[in-house]
Length: 338
Image 1 (spheres, rainbow, N blue to C red):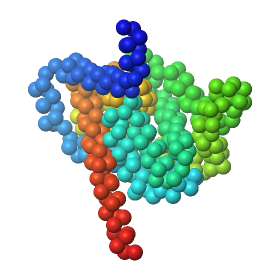
Image 2: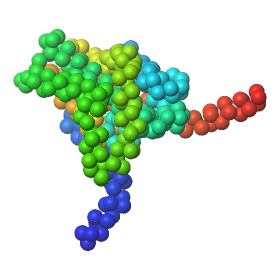
Image 3: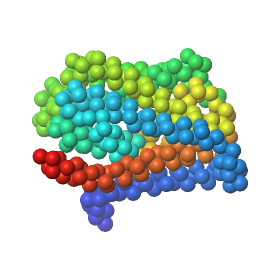
Image 4: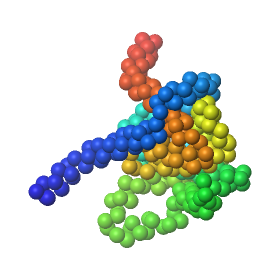
């Protein structure tokens, strides 16, 4: 019986893990609603008094975020001569948001982006994946910088708990990881892989990744631009949370969000849910309530942000389904002109 269970798990591992993550995500959302919304009438009253203009402003940060993500991505792809335009990459980013709602962690859509850029830009998949990796780590470094900035701006504790030591550790680790991404030869993994036969095949598969990471040493200006774009993107996410909270009457400072958003972003990368769903909402509520926000307003704010992500994901899903049709129309027009 035990062997049958093990065999079944091995054959259906991916499906089982997806189901488990879906259950975790749904359970976390249900838990949030069940524990934070004590009075439904109070929720309706909050929504009636919500500032629509601030909510629209919050939603608009997603539009800016999609654009700046595409620009950042294009800057890295240009170093590898991929030749992809901003419009193509914006579409791919949108579709990536759609896949974020179905794949593990909040970076599930990056898997699609890596594949899409590899196919359309005619570059190796390892090269495309390493570009996404550099993108992500630039974001983590910027998150660490924002967290440190929050300390200098006076944000040093959540409730009675000091955040100084965890933030400093996170910042130092971010810098070390960023350095290793740009200088992968420092750890001399190549020699280690050559020494053990079991690693040699893996080394061949990772050769494109290694080569691409090494090549970025020659594009220092591009890396500077990437950091600038990452700072802008992270600030757009901060404003997204801040405007949504202010629209609901939550009186927390911008400094609070400069700290909490990078922390929540990292938490959502944990591979235990679908698209960070549930993790993002509960961690946001936990921190906001610890800082003095009302439970129902904090929970409603988290669900509004979640709804915005779903809306963008739906747009990405529609784009994904009509893209082949648009491509066929463009190809037929090109044929007719020739």
